[in-house]
Image 1: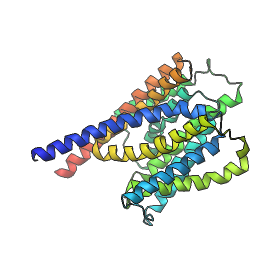
Image 2: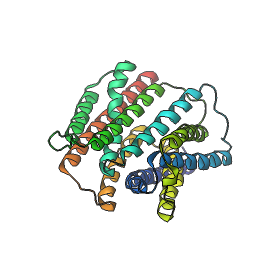
Image 3: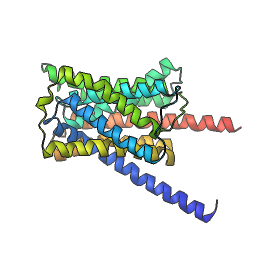
Image 4: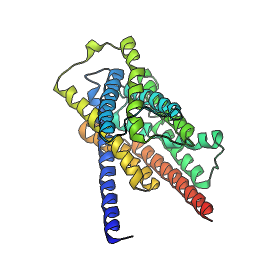
Length: 313
């Protein structure tokens, strides 16, 4: 490798680290932003507006880069799956849950997705349950159990039960999608598919908005405008593009572990911005869940490295 090529590679890696830090910050801070925004707009309407804005911006970016095209027929099942499950269902459920659950706690529970991937991959795909995966899953489940401490949980409040249940269900749905697409061979680039995925999510959610929500309940004004400008262009369009760039430039283990910092930023920023209480249950549960996710992610990385070495022999 020449000095010039090495310098370009180092510069690209440095830029990727900056982008990863930006994504962690913007996605983490978005949890209290979403919680705040729900004062001015119904949850499904909020999610739909975010999808529409994100789709429009990414379509313009894809067109500018010459990547805006109709997805290949082999990619359509994944485009539909991501649009329906990861974007429409996940964001819809999260926004509904945020009405009843503190933003910091919501961020932690929504990011338990990787925990559910482990048993699903073992059962559905026949993947090996390694010792690290097993320990990680046990730690993560212990963290969820701590957060659902029966002595500190208000079992009499149906909204509390609904909100926490929806967050875990949203994480489970995302995990199912991850397992389903794990072996998919992509035909189009992530950027070329993103506008279609977001557009499908918006189209699916729109009828539910008109059926179950009152659009006249939207309180238009500068607070909602700022929330939407943060969620559409920044938290959706920019962060999606940035994650594509980061995934291509940095090792998978780095990206995976980096995104685990999102709920930490969400938890801390919700305490700072919204004044949410930092409880022992939430902090202990988050520590256990984070430890479990790190071990599960590290186990996957070790398996991938071993597979590559065997393939190279």
